[in-house]
Amino acid sequence: MLDKFLKRDKEAAPLNVKTWFRATVCLASLAAILRTVAYFTSFDSEIGYFNESFFVTLVNWLIVVTCAFALSGFIFISKDADLSHKIDNSANSIFFSATFAGFIMLADFAYKLFTIIGEEKFSYYKMIFSSAYRSDNAYIIRVTAIIEIFGILASVLSAVCFFVRSSKNPKAKLSAWLGFFPIIRALVGVAQMYFDMTVQMNHPSKLMLQFALIAVMFYFLCEEREYVSPEHARPRRFFISGCLAYFLAFAGGFSEIIGFFTGKLSEGAFCVEAFFCFILSFYILARTNSFVRCMNAQPKTEAVVEEVTEETAEEEKIDE
Image (cartoon, rainbow, N blue to C red; front, side):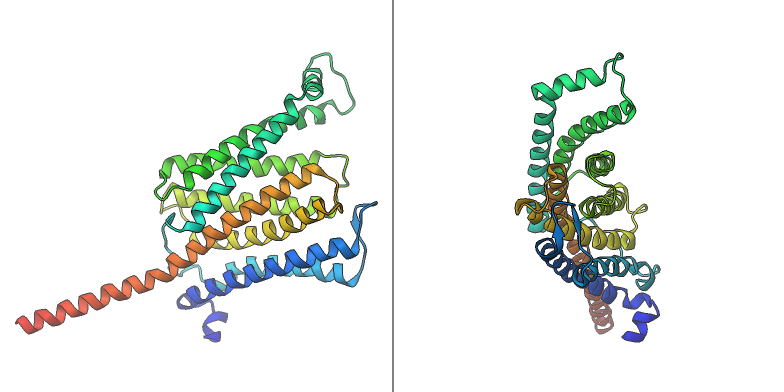
């Protein structure tokens, strides 16, 4: 078994997929707990950075090594293995996670809309889009405003996407078209944090959530291929991107939310992105788990077909 594992044998691919999935879930839980502990023991709220203790170094290396482990699936899971599957929406976990994500996206839409239509903010928007507006950072300010507007639209359409995908029999074409909006919503989150000049570029929360959002974007791109057509699907890429996105979204989202509500973090915009990542981690986990279940059920189905074929052949011989 170990020999097949190291040789990337396609017959060992189902075993490797199980190993990567279980290990990623365990490591995500461990990283989330340790990073949360690091906020209480090693984070300086005044300067916004962790100290250089051994514990913080250990947590950082755990995150880096786990990401490398998830990506190493491209090496140890055979490219020639038959990992074919279909999008399965029958699991209750997919229904609940997709529905919950839809409601969170509606809340995100309401929150973003409220921040823009406020009397002061609305006047501010009218001012910065005026042709008479002049500022040294006018370009960045206007780009940031446009990104916020795109974020509002992406949030409400992402909610529609998740509600559609919560159905047991969603329409493939509609799901495929709507699937671009969670990608846009994640991209907006990355852009907003990048252009937020009130927080240092190498702030630990900023970096962790940006990496998590990028991983989420990559996952949804891979999921899109699954909805478009079986010919365009890349099951191995879908699975590995799911493991990586779940790990970063769960570990980053959970620790950032706890840090915010305990007063260790003060960036409200980061808390919104942390909620986005945390909720999507459950959706990604449910989808990836469904992939593993469907893949493991495939050989059993083939085995049943073979048994039925053999029984039929025997009956034909007896009849003769």
